[in-house]
Structures are given as C-alpha cells and as structure tokens.
Length: 632
Image (cartoon, rainbow, N blue to C red; front, side, top):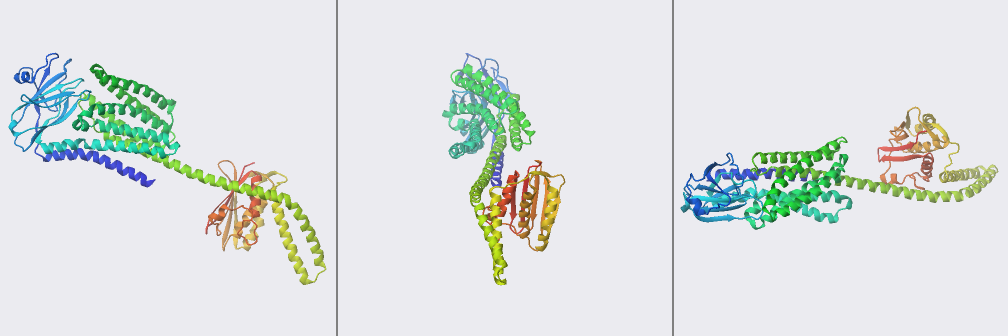
C-alpha cells in the first residue's frame, strides 16, 4: 500500500514539475536566441458585402480606414455585423540566415497571409475553432516588405493579440513544437492509462467495476480534453481539426456526468439525492448539447448559438456541479470520511483554478487561452486514484477478514461434527460401560481384602485405573448432554472467590500464585457446580503450564455490550498457533495422561450457559482465556 501511494505521488509531482518546466524552458530558450518583435500594426474592418482583393487593400493609404493596434494593449471591439478584417505591418531589415515570423494568438476562422501582393499561406476551417499559431518562412530579400493578413470570423473575436516574433526559422520552429508538447504528452498519457484501465476491467471482480468504470471515463475525458485543447493537432494536422474540435466538446460534456457517477459509486446519492438527481439532469443536457453541436457543423448561425449558449451552459454546468459536489462532500465530513476529505481537496484545487481561468477568460473578452487547469487536473486525478486505491485496499482487507471468518466457521463446523460424533458415541455406550466397571471395581475391592500385601497393591492400581475410566465416562456423559441441573442466578464474584480458594494450594505447590480482581454485581444464569467445574478446568490448565514464579490472573468485568467477561491469564509456556487451533478437540492433549475431554466439557458447559470461550496465546509469553456470558 505504501509503495503504491509513493509511486502515485512521485508521478503526480513529476507531471506537475514537467508542466511548469516545459513552458519555462521555452521562454528561457527564447530569451537566449536572437529574437526581435513587431509590437504595432494596422487593422482595417471589411464591411459586409464589400470584400476587397489584395490589390485593392494594398492600394489604400494609411488614412483610408486603417487604425493602429498595439500588442497586448486594449483590444479593438468587433463592430456589429463585421465578419472579416485586414492586418498589415512592415518587416524590418532581415539579416538572419533563415528568418521567419512566429504569429501566435491570431484569432480567425479563416486566414490568408500575403507578402506584398503574393499569397504565402492560407487556412480555411469548416468548424468554429479560431486560434491560429503559424510560422511564416521568410528570406532576406523580403526586408522592409509589407505583410497583409486577411481574417474571417464566425464568432465574437477577430484579430491579433500577441507580438509578432522575428527570428531564426529553426529556433522558432523548435519552440513552436515544444510549447504544446506537454499537452500532447499529458493528454495521450491519460488516454493510454484509460485504455489500459478499460482492458483491465476484463480481469477485475464485479464489485470493483462500478468505481473503476467511472474513474476510467473521468480519466479518458480529461485526457481527450487536454490533448484536443492543445493547438498541436491544428498546427501540424489541420485536416483532422474538425474531428479534434468535436472530440473536445464531447469529452467536456461527459466529464461532469462521469465525475458524478464516480462520486455516486463511492459516497452514494448524496444529501436529498442531489448527486443522483443532478446526474440525471446532466444526461438530458448532454443530449441537448450534442444535438446542438451536430447542428452547428452544418449551419454558421447555429454555430454561433452553440458557441455562446453552449459555452455558457457548460460553464454554468461546471459551476452548479462543483457546488453540489462540495456540498455533498461537506455533508460527508460529518462522519469524518477521509475519502471525502481527499476528494474535496482535489476538487477544490481543480474547480478553483478552472473558475478563476473562466472569469479571466471573460474578463479579457474571451482572448485568454486557459492553461493552468491542465496542471490543477493532476491534483484532482491524484485524489481520485488515491480514493480508488484506498477502496481496493479496503476490499482486500475485507477479503482477508472474510477468509479468516470462513476459516473460523470451517473450524467450528469441523468441531461441531466431531462434537456430534462424540455425543452420539457417548450417549450410546457410556451407561453400558459404566455398569460393568462398577461391578468389576466391587469385586476387586472384595478380593483385595483377602489378598496379601503384594496382590493388594495390584488390586489398588487396578481400582485406580477403573476410577479413571469412570471419570472419562462421566466426562463423556457431561459432554454429550451438559445438564446444568438447577439453573439459578449466580454471583460471579462469589463463585470466583470460592474457586480461587480451592485452586490456590495447587498453584502454591507448582511454585506459582493466583491473583483475583473482580468487579461487584456481576450476575449470570447457570448452575454453580457446572460453572465451577468449567472455571477450575481452565485455571488448572494455566497452573500446570506455569514455570517458576508463575502467576495466574483472574479478572471479571462487564464489557460495552453489558456481558460478563472472565479473563484467565497466565505467564506460562504458551501454546503454539497450530496447537491453539485444536484446543477443545476430542482426544487432543499435550498432557501425558490427558484425553482432551476436559476442555471439550468446558466448552460445552459454557455454551449451555449461552456463553463463549476463546483462547489467545503466544509461545513463551503465556495464554489468555476469555469467557463471555450474557448478564442476568
């Protein structure tokens, strides 16, 4: 468990550091390279129905509709009805080996770039993605030439925001690739993890599948969102741009329902069933959202509605969903649920960063490209993984506990079968055997009176063995049917004091001592003589296991269930785990002349009094016996 958590922790830290270091490396490298920037240019709105050619635009003077724009300054507001615009700027003297332009944050659906009157690059899209980042190769002969850029829009933003970088083509292109590489690595990494999670579902137990399925879907949607949000595919594989655009919207619409499904599997339906109810609402929202998405692919008007209404709906969905999740997690805090604390930490970091970036996005007139949510998502995913690992370990511990219980039940079943066998055997032959033994004993006593000393010693030995056999028969009868006789209320404290007085001399002879500590007013129902017999059997075994300066402690008290508990502890030689499992079995004993029936009788007496007997022991340290009987 510790190694798994450490591994996850190291991966999360590495990804976070990588997310920070790659952009920093990009900026640091750019600072060392010979890069200059164009920070001012001119812009021209193209009136609807009055589209101009490059020849017409290049013939216009600076006073013919052109207005200045500064990089990262106050962005010009798009006039109502305007769908296209022109940019122009002049190149400086180009003295580099392979000069090039790096144009980033160029907002337009379609784009055409001209050097003087010659077109050098164009891009047309059949979907609503409007972020352009391009590298334009140049040559030194193009020094001081004018660059014209035509922009066509179908949503609310149009124009250029960042400065235009001029530098060596190789350096700009290297940074051009590097900047989005972390998104590709992180996104594809999560997608592959989700894929292997999906494959692993074939080998998982069914009770793991609900939470595993939900986490798989969360991991997959987040991985697809990170990968498709990057401009990497749009830069290098523009022919797949529409597919990427659709994948991002589908994944983002599935994220909240997947998260709610995971939460429902882990924590339940939440207060007032909010989790389940909101998940149901989300299903209808997804259907509406995806239908609007499909329609937007065939209509520019619906595309604008989808972009504005759909984006607002998605934002509101995230806001409400996070509020419900946080409220539900706060509700879980009442029970001090550690998993709720872990998940709330991950969600709080992720939701806080997303909401701040959304607010900043709208504050900057939708010109800000959200980035830090990709870093915060690692904390959120880490919390989900930790929760699932905790669940798996919890289920593993439960499985171990169940296997131990099954082993106990199996041992009890075997013991019950043996008890049943011995009971039937004892009931069938005990009386028949006892009568011949008594007759034989009587005749031996008569013969012993008429025999000489030598023969009389033999007769005495035979009578002792007959008495021992009779005791075994008595144990058989007691075990087969532990008749408690007269059942009455027993004062445990009084009974234990009498037992301690009886057993103390035996302990002294063995070089040990008996210590009694008993609470007052401990009352049970049973037979006094049978109760003494059971306790004496247990205490006698403890005394026989004592060494020099041994000690037997007898404690009696009430537990939290108001049952009477009697503990018999000794510091004797202890019992091996294998032998401990066999205590109470017939004919199992470590004593030279033991039959194993004594403990069996003790078990039966305690069971007849609606009690329970349990032993714990450590070899070389001692043994503890616990008797639990329902209080009267």
